Length: 131
Image (cartoon, rainbow, N blue to C red; front, side):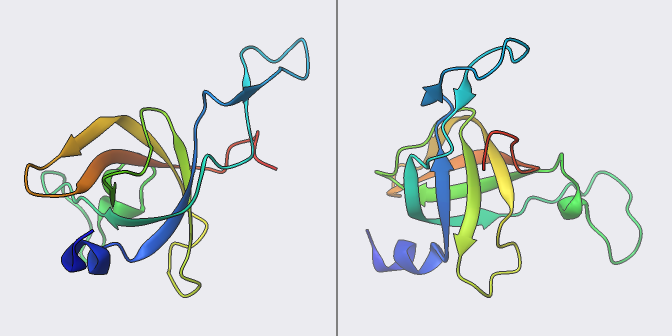
């Protein structure tokens, strides 16, 4: 990892693969219950907030606060991650979005000169399957 990439990855996230499923616990629940154990723990990352300037907003506000805003998650190139994975921001302790959950949308976008992978993410509430 280059020094520039290492400096830019300023937060840590835990990533959950929904394919690591447990057996359903009730007849009413349809589908598999994802494991509450993270697939990747403490991955170095960066969340890049995307702004939608085409929509009028009140002065001083942006749609970054909205749940349906699509942001970008940058991970180191060898960190496993994929479509529909869940993640939570775990550090540093003074990070304002500590504990924020997100869901990855689609596969990675990679640059030819970068050892980083970029994923589109949407902020979500804490999943019910997580204890």
